[in-house]
Amino acid sequence: KDAAATAAATASVKKLAATFKGNVENVMKKRYQPHFTWGQMVSWFKQTIYDPSASLSADRRGCMSLPDPESAYADHKGEYAKKERRVLLAQLARAPDKMWPTAWIWSFRNPGKVYGSPFIDDAIATSRNEAPTLAALLKEMQSMSS
Image 1 (cartoon, rainbow, N blue to C red):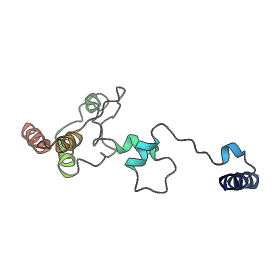
Image 2 (cartoon, rainbow, N blue to C red; image 1 turned 30 degrees about the horizontal axis):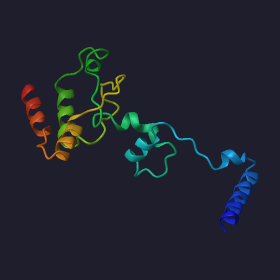
Image 3 (cartoon, one colour; image 1 turned 90 degrees about the vertical axis):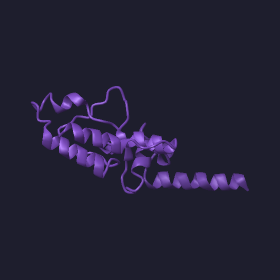
Image 4 (spheres, helix red, strand yellow; image 1 turned 135 degrees about the vertical axis):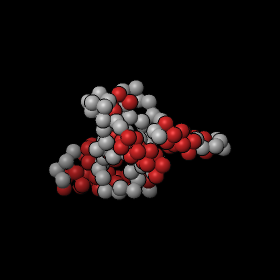
């Protein structure tokens, strides 16, 4: 019985390959990128995208990795001012789990592949039954900008 089922499946694959003039070895294979699983977990709700790992660099801005501090000053000639700080604090207070807009002045170069953010710190603290720290961090940052 198993041999007959295997033969039938092989015949179906050969028929499919002949129909699309493809190679039997490649018809039923898909090559996955190294970050496919991570992308699938992050973008599970986007059912129609071909490569879920393609938008990971934008998706992790702010909520999974913090910006390079030098980027606020290097190319922008000191543009990091009260307005940017207010916007940053509002983002952290309102939606720390959401990606930061790509139009902001910060660069998210991460050659060391170091990940972390106030949101991740709180998630880890909660998983360990520890007190979250984001509210205290926001309060301290707000007091420094006054």
